[in-house]
Length: 396
Ligand SMILES: [Zn+2]
Image (cartoon, rainbow, N blue to C red; front, side):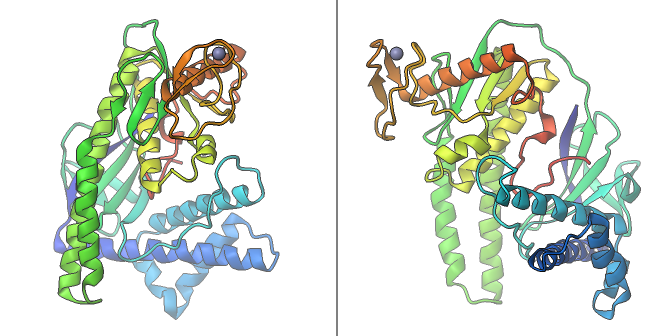
């Protein structure tokens, strides 16, 4: 199975400049791709992927305005084209109704002051002893916080907004199955609690310090907005906001790892609602921040399930899981969110709203499994699950 391993890297000043060029070129190519596709779409013209790439890379390099594209590794530009293609496809599929679930918006143009990245396949990078060689950048120092399990097939070099650099490798890792167990669980993702399980265990909370940091972050953001554009105080304030973002991100990731491991270790199968689908029911609540946290958690559950020989499946179809009685199956009708507990009119069972939803997810997951049509059950998804916002999802 494919997983990502991320390390902090320390490029020298000259390498930082070379990386900045590569980030800039990849960003421009990505944005040019979107523009070319937008223009073709507006003109009602069908345009092939190779033609898009030819226009924004090969042809563009010949023009004086884009001649500098030749200074960076072309593999990074090709990958930027592919990223743009995927983003465009998602939006287009959503427009035409082929892609189910929540509406995907037009892909955003990449911006200079956001997180920057380039993606490289095997012909654009190599491991030179302890160092990471990146084409046209050189051998970069890496802090190997753990060993790579295998030779990586691709790497994403990232500069976060706080100025730190990372290398995120896609590697193949062998499964190490745990002894089997009988328990199966359905999970409902929430805001007040991160996870509510069908087995009646206490809900797994969202760490409180995330909320505390959230307040701090809001204040820092306010301070940033008061600083004059282009001033050095503004640059400082931006770094402060970025550092707080990093802490929130790292805390959330750490918590998600622990939560995912617990769910996978304690259960032979874990079922969750497909976020694309549940998003429909939760549009008003689902802030992108929470979305990111949820999909990150599900991605990790999928990865760990694959790692430890357990099953993870998403319940794909739309069912109002909070409206159906998990004991007798009668649909009780919609309930406002303030209703935390209700009694089934048909069988008299008293339900906790969220636990009932989790039980319904478990039942739907089991039903999918016994139908075994494979349509909505995709065990051990690994990298195929939507990842953190702004990252590249698959190794392809
Ligand atoms: Zn009932």
